[in-house]
Amino acid sequence: MADGSNPRQHRGARAPPRGGARRGRNGRGLRRDPREIEERDQRDASRDVAPMVPAPDAMIVDSSTQTLEEVVDSLASTVDARRRGGRGEQ
Image (tube, rainbow, N blue to C red; front, side, top):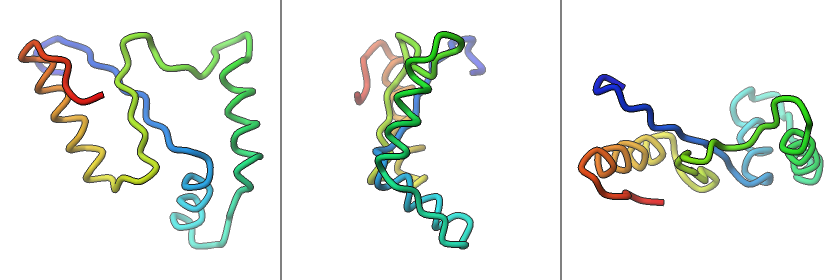
């Protein structure tokens, strides 16, 4: 960020919407079983080397039901609020 602060975000979505989103992006009908996605996420989060977990100060964004524009707007609002000394949306 230009002001030297370093807000972090961790974007995620629940497994069912993520499987459908992948299908929508590539148009080839790639649909994943939600259980498969959840199992992979659990493996990624619990591995010994470089576990995929949000930073302690990360803004957690569940984008399961949000459009890209809604995610960007939410993050921008939160960053603005934190710059002003508030906590912003959680």
